Length: 276
Image 1: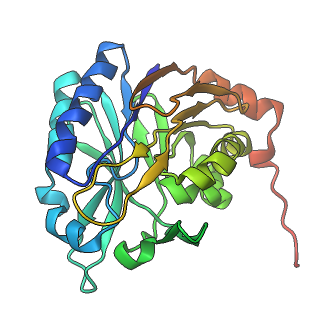
Image 2 (image 1 turned 90 degrees about the horizontal axis):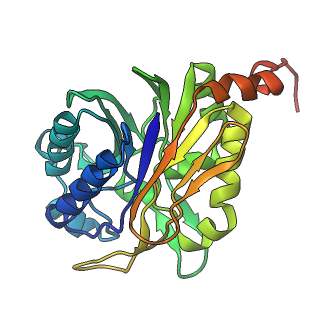
Image 3 (image 1 turned 30 degrees about the vertical axis):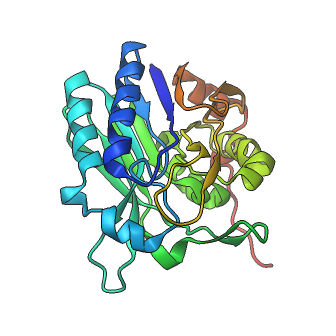
């Protein structure tokens, strides 16, 4: 199976972002990809909550979701929309950070709301309070496809290995890890964390990423790390998207999952313990 990671530099205007994303989806399909993945917040990268409130839509009205569903159906491909910022109707006004798995007929096969919120003080210049604008999800999701089971995660979820282990134990052989990783944490932790999650679970980990300095109309400037990665179940990096927007393809042999788990069956060697 050929997968394609789309590396984007999305701005804060969903209408401007969509044609560029569709163009890369078509480029990936033309290269033979049957599973195409986009990064976190594909529709809108913005740090301004008031601006987001003006441009984000509900799931039912979101132009990016509608456009990409139509494109998946037209091309006959599986499409992981890493996540979309969406209005939820919550009383507190917070948005959802929601990942979608789209089937080749354009239907929504699965939805996953990001569980872990990025509330951190990386440096004095890089402070994030994702939970102030987005409400966390509370349910892990594994989706059935015609090539196996896919476990859905988003960005900061990467730092919580128990989530990935639960997805693998539920049958996932591929884990998606779409992201808009910060440059500081990305340089230090992105690749080691992705490789660790692959090794611990014996899964392929496919991580499409946002990259570069993101165009904005208002608010603070956002920069992201890039380096979309595909990692094999044994921990090898199969593809690295570098720092430019574009498409990176990778051929995946799902038989490698069973081989890796057979060599080191740590996913199934749990033992009960007490303490600490």
